[in-house]
Length: 103
Length: 254
Image 1 (cartoon, rainbow over the protein chains, first blue to last red):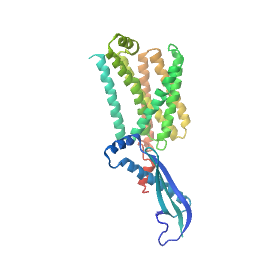
Image 2: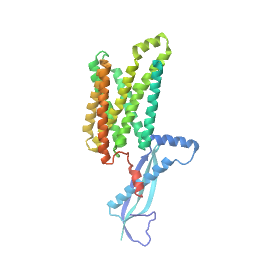
Image 3: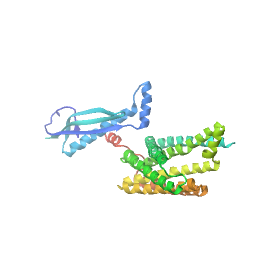
Image 4: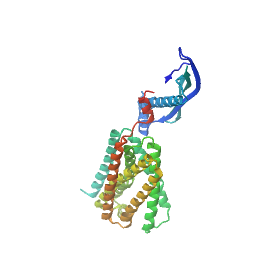
């Protein structure tokens, strides 16, 4: 599955199928939350949260791709991520784009 | 060495062993810390916050041991089993595993040890230190126990660890077989029987040797079931907690 952030795919003509999206809300366990709270005392990268967001983006992308495959798409254009905080220590990631079928 | 020192050493040893066991679990099964904590919370909410106040409000006479045993057993079984069911559903249902059930059962049992053994004997020690007439009277009436009783208490708590792990494995097995309600009912029945045995031999009749024998038998049966589930789940690669969906997606290159 080809995924691009641009609106066009160079040298390709396609038929637009519609919006596809995937989302997830992830949190770390209480131990990681406590550990990260201590880390904020001295600053630096919160590696457990970085990993959490990497996993969240990967899962949201996977779900979006599965939705696109379900409607017979070959590629996704105008791909974007969006994220928001749902509650303390939990974040939502949405992956969305336009599913297209190459001609 | 007097009894106070033995009690203090035993209580500290139990605390050290619990912390060591939790750290070992976390090292052996990464991610188990939160599940141990959830299991402990399950005990705290179902038994400490929910059951004890209701027992206090009950108008049952302390002397009416049969009614008390049935009441305590039924309520304990319902509350604890419901907590187990909810914790497995909320924390483990997407990655059912032997280590998950083991961690949750350990958390439940350790929290019980903390409230029923460690805190109990720490209070006893503090009252023993008071030393005045009131302290002596309170100690004599409510807390004074022989060291043999303390070690039987400890053996019962160790037996409880095996029992609670086994009950969590039954619930996990229920979710794996898509029959969670049936297995929930089984755990309620087992917990009812367990609580009945504890109250019948211990609180009601003070038959300590029968109580100790029953606890050892329960521990042996629970260990056999735990090992049987270990081998069964090992065949399905369900020993480790396993990766969550996000970790799997990341590995797949998304």
